[in-house]
Image 1 (cartoon, rainbow, N blue to C red):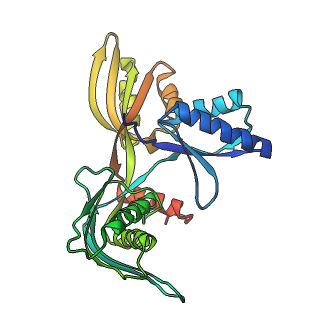
Image 2: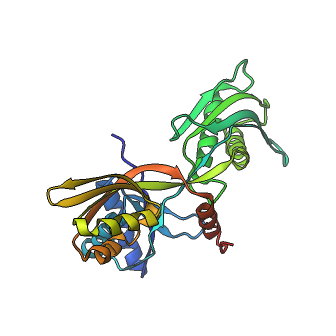
Image 3: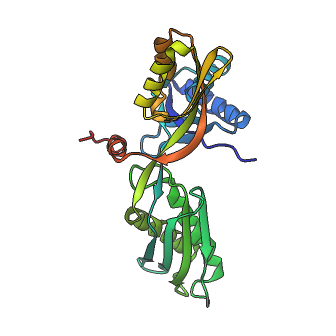
Length: 296
């Protein structure tokens, strides 16, 4: 069974060493119970990141950590789980060569890297012929390519929807090994991804609002102000139902906004729908913020 990828994350930091131990145990238990909840560590900051399907999902997780596992922790602001994608197909030639006395390292590959038709996951195609690369090294190239997907060239977000076709290469009888070809795969992808027209992708949520008719105009206006696109409107008994597609980044704090607009008389639900390219002006701000640079 496949489970959806988390679309929102927050940093969580234990207050004491004792809390750190309890936090680790609690997160492991909760992740075992809930396949849509993920735990990771930020490579640069060392912070623990927890990711889930929405603000409420993570609020419940944090509440359970406090109540059931007695963890005292500082919790950061919600962050959108952006992705990156590539739009152009690139032919990349990469040679990994290292010689420092004794046995060296050598791997040379020719690989075509571009967007996959599905737009998700990673697709690897082996077209090596004539033993230009020994069979035992080809899985290492695939491993290296796929490992590079965890960090995109724009802002370090994971890359989705990549197709890689390995079609030529060279090896050395003494210096080549699996590690050399894995490194070549990883570095080839990093080089290619910068040239393959990378773009930023954001999660788009399907949002349903149920509201009394007198607030309908204000609700629609508010959704549109957050880049929402109205999909349908209709009546259900004596209330109006508005369905729309809205970027997750516009939905932070929406419960408070909606209560204010409708005097607490509307309800809403949302679920992940798809990823979509971020408009360039907004993408530039996200990339600058992720790089620790103020947006111009």
